[in-house]
Image (cartoon, rainbow, N blue to C red; front, top):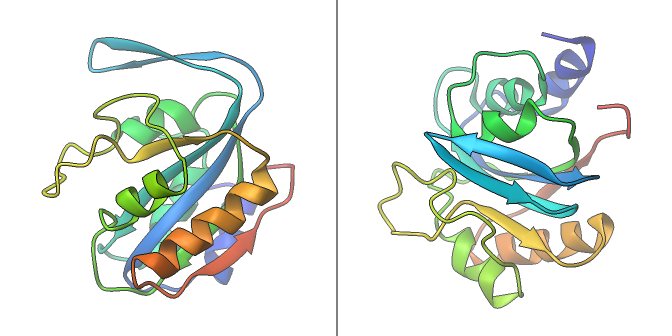
Length: 163
């Protein structure tokens, strides 16, 4: 675990919750997930997830920040590329992330890769990775609004540009 992950872990609760990673993709990247290839254009992406296991939000999000890790989940295919996680929006809600998907869709977010990150989704979301056609800071504002719309109390953690 790198020192950035350790510092972040100290700021996030060791409790279950729902989170969104706001990810800056500076140039086109190709993802290969389970044999399917997808291209992500430069832009601001949001990945929504839940952390219910040991270590809660602190453990899960800290893992996402590490660029060196065993690729286990769809999001690992993205976070091991040259991307920057700029913000984490989270809530201590004892729930799943799926209520965020329609809220983000209503705010204009799009699904760039169908089926990304939602293999165990019971709500049949199109995906748990969404694209925002605007700036990163504006994106965070909308993500927090989506949390409130889903009944979650959002907390925002800004990360520096050296992630």
